[in-house]
Image (tube, rainbow, N blue to C red):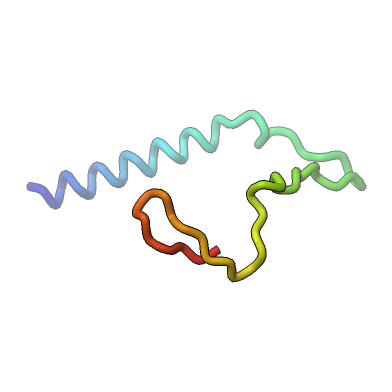
Amino acid sequence: MIDMFAIGLTHALMALVALRLLTRADLDRDPPPGEAPQIAPPAPETRRPAGMIVRNPLNGGPDHA
């Protein structure tokens, strides 16, 4: 019984994600030829040097960047 519930739940969640992805408006628009897509750089406060260890506020343990 619990196995069928687990499988049904995961499949329902995947179907929900697929429907949400397919209904996004930006999937219907392609950039004009010759124009690069606009990708915003990360905010300066979120960039860290590679290999820097930071404290994960969710579990209090170290988290590698």
